[in-house]
Length: 499
Image 1: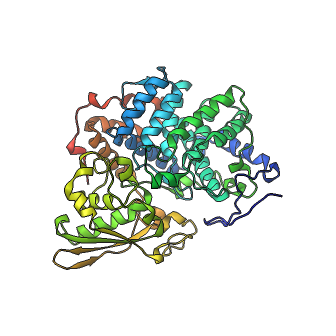
Image 2: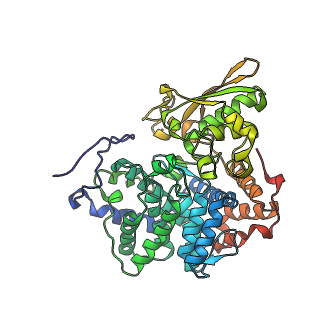
Image 3: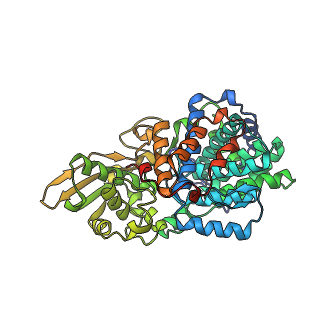
């Protein structure tokens, strides 16, 4: 009685359960323990080399995202808040002189990382894991003593694998479109449970606490009213660690529906067999919403291939999928608006050939040339590019709805010539047929973001080397010793900035 079923808009056709309805009869209470046992029992030797390589890149990419956010206003706000609200010297707030409690560091570094929309993404989750898991992981190290690189990596893999499935499960079984913090908190709880030595029963309670306290925030609110709230990953990081600390003290919270609902428990059956870090994990090239990436890539491509200068453009028409037209089409007044709009970033990328923190903040937002070009950009919905089943041109079984992010761009020049581009997809999205980035590409992205933040090349290189050789470290926290205040390492390094 009271059970309302709907067909999910995603791939699986899973019946949805309204959040106002709940019955213990819908749960498989053994499912949570099964997932936790796998996560706590995972060993380094059991993880494929390709997955280990991916999670090392994820660490580097996430630190780079936080580094790229250092000049944004959100960083200044968060530093002041943490200084006043989380006293302590247990853990480090990245790239600052501040120290705080472990919970304070998880929150601060998560919020700052979430402040620049260029972090990793997971297909089927409609969101981000690393922006919460990586900050939470380093904060947890401050409570755990020495943790080897191998254990650090293994715990991260367990966190990502469970977190990505939790995100998938949540989207398939509830009717609201919530932020990433709602599910990445569970990935954080898995990492913390391993590192802090929770029992299976304690970890099961921690997962239930994280699911219950995780921010079930409405992401479309931020898309339409952009603000520093972003994707809730700062709270996801905080809640993940908090849940484990509560469970360790005996706080109860057993019952985690996004794992144990009978209609979705099958999503966890392939843990240890199918590695989502390998198959569904992707990176961003541009510092904006995923929906805007194809139009930006397409614009850059048409202009470069035809040697079109920005001042020669009469109009840019981006034909794309329905959701992209939901992004703001006004001129942004701050970085949050710039990262959730679409006309301005297309124009900024057309002028500069890249889109990073310097394009979505500061002087660029008032650059008259970019603003004038933005007025010449028009968005059009192409129904053939919108598909609930994934990219209509791709038929692979792993093709997710996110791969239906497609655009084709037409540029008209002042002399009346029209240049039509090919279909463009999200750069680096290997599920959409794009080349998957390796160490080289993620390293270049890190060096670019670090250069814009003002770090010296030699310091950036050391961070890269430690991240990509994490398994060799006897103490994974050694990486944080390099995340010192930026004013100790010089001013902006133009040599680091690449297009």
